[in-house]
Length: 230
Ligand SMILES: *Cc1c(COP(=O)(O)O)cnc(C)c1O
Image (cartoon, rainbow, N blue to C red; front, side):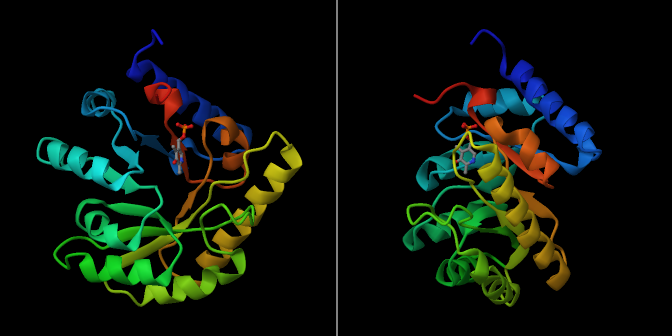
């Protein structure tokens, strides 16, 4: 691609703004998470210099190295873990990340809370919902979200912020719409039961408009900003 990361960030931002306007929402209600997995530190710095502050990473070891390399010079980067997490790797997320989007098991939540230093802000977490109900997908069943939320709510070093999902990859707009509106409902249920719920992490490059029309507050975009991953 011969455009720069700064150009592509501003294109992503204006697509988000247009989607917000179409459904009469304020653009400021929707945050852009730049997904930098597999991309070099120099790309993150380039995006930072263009004003980007929220970065998403998927792989524990890779992200630990990047965060350690960048944290002194760029302390205001907010690091979001958005990948699958095995229980033997929770410590790295507890120690280095600000946010964790893919929480779907009590055991992982407990380990993250135990391993998070009380000196730091609590780890900000979203519950990942398996909205497509495919066995292969990660996330918790929609009916089990409230129970997990109650458990997380008791954990001193976690702060529950909302829900996250990766809807079915499909061109069927009805399937997409149905999944997004179910997610919105789950999010609203959480808001009614718990304080501090303000994050609905859904929407990627291909389904931005529909995600935003259904209340998304954080969209996750990778390759449209940093280029295709090899
Ligand atoms: C990789 C990833 C993204 C970004 O995907 P792109 O196709 O690169 O925009 C968003 N969300 C999650 C959970 C991801 O793993």
